[in-house]
Length: 115
Length: 107
View 1 (spheres, one colour):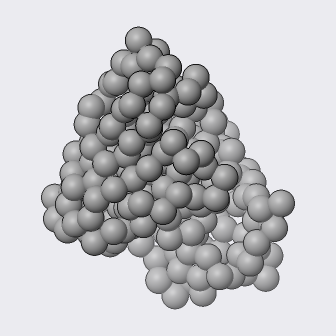
View 2 (view 1 turned 180 degrees about the vertical axis):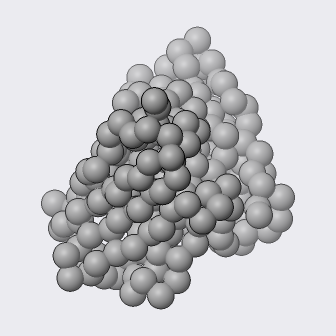
């Protein structure tokens, strides 16, 4: 079964850090662009970052201003999102997605930034 | 940045209706457009990619059309399970962008 499972979300104080993980199975992970998408509860979808199959290219939404870093480990079939200097506006459900068009989605992990 | 205008934001319809959702780009994206369906509390699901190609397992009442800057998602005969929110998304260039979403609700 093709699936991706996110983990690592939780409650963090403003200015804190969090590392999200996405474990992939059932498909050739190393052949897929991988992406993080977030969604503030009740709002629309926002693309956050994407990484090429071999990790050689990474793209981010401009509003992050360098606070987040996407990475992957193809030996572990895993995708990561290191989030630093977190702000209240980063509070959202974070989804891991695979493909050029995103044909693989995880169930999401909630990140809450609050004091 | 490619800006997307998705309309309408809210669509009230009845079971059996034919509904259309529009997505307009600020610049041409060839056919690099996808449509997603999202139900409350769930992750989005891919319905259509390459503007008009139905994802495996998606019912044939869903169809997509368009190229360049103007795209349309059509549901030919709305079923109860189709009441959800729909998003368009371009994957022609970075940053990837999503439309604002269209909530299809029961009239």
